[in-house]
Length: 103
Image (tube, rainbow, N blue to C red; front, side, top):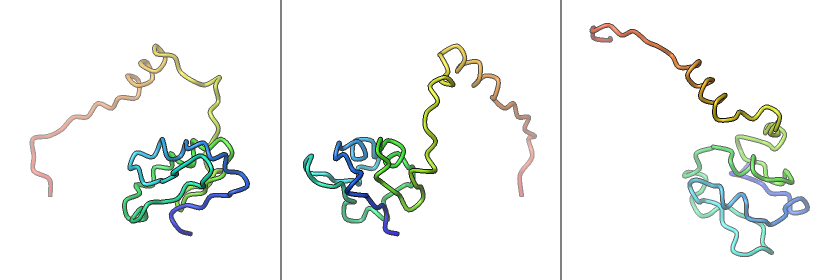
């Protein structure tokens, strides 16, 4: 597979994949065209999967991720600020280091 493939029948041409790409390697010149990778995108892509995850119609498949691998957001499990802070503090690791050289 190339970097990504887009199903033209599913693509809404809304530009979301282009908007969320952190490396800006997706080009969609207008709302009638199908998004496509820019020149050199295969090398520049960081395989984050944002383009696949944001597509509401599941039209884009990336070399490292398919739409089926993106779990939908479960709105009942979204944390509020207090719960998020508690979770992060609870998960924080505490490490004890020795003042010794590592091989």
